[in-house]
Length: 131
Image 1 (tube, rainbow, N blue to C red):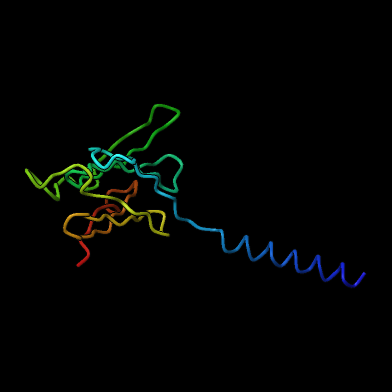
Image 2: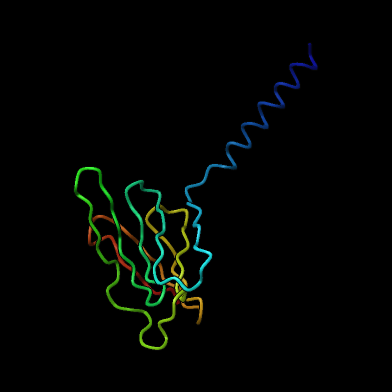
């Protein structure tokens, strides 16, 4: 009986540890296998919100869908981060963070990075270069 009790306690402890280690706020970004795509959608932890990235220029739009007709899209940054011949498909990529509202934008050609923050409120959203 004692062995059975010890076995169940060990099993319960293992399940508890497994549950604690698997809880994460970060979405897994599944990128298109095609590196030549012009646009990618990134899922956020908000069920209604995606980020649309122009992989050539780094311009990002907040895309919010709706079941009642209130869908919208607005830009987080309207200034392109690359232009002309430098604007190549697949140049920019977004990485989720543990913070629901923040992503890291990477220029895969020259290594520049930005903090990207989406939010419904205009004063709480934007993109900032990380030096």
